[in-house]
Length: 97
Image 1 (spheres, helix red, strand yellow):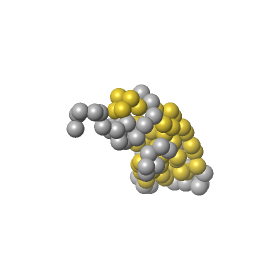
Image 2 (spheres, rainbow, N blue to C red; image 1 turned 120 degrees about the horizontal axis):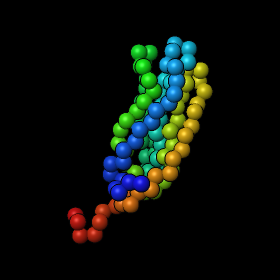
Image 3 (tube, rainbow, N blue to C red; image 1 turned 120 degrees about the vertical axis):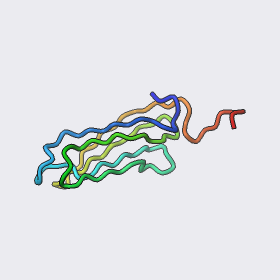
Image 4 (cartoon, rainbow, N blue to C red; image 1 turned 90 degrees about the horizontal axis):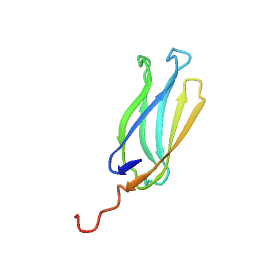
């Protein structure tokens, strides 16, 4: 649960040997209810030791956040999580602004 959608902490970690033939090359984070669903994208170069992303994202409302991990063999891994937001990032409280 996030008190406000303005800054929602997000950590994504994918178990992978990160070798030349078996590694994660990209992570993409989607917030399905946001005006622009792609909220974050990270690419991992050949020297990356682990596939881990720590950031903050904005959420317009309570919604499902989707993470797509692309592997070096072109397979995709998908994970979903429901994030409840008390006050959306695009909502102003009356009298505050």
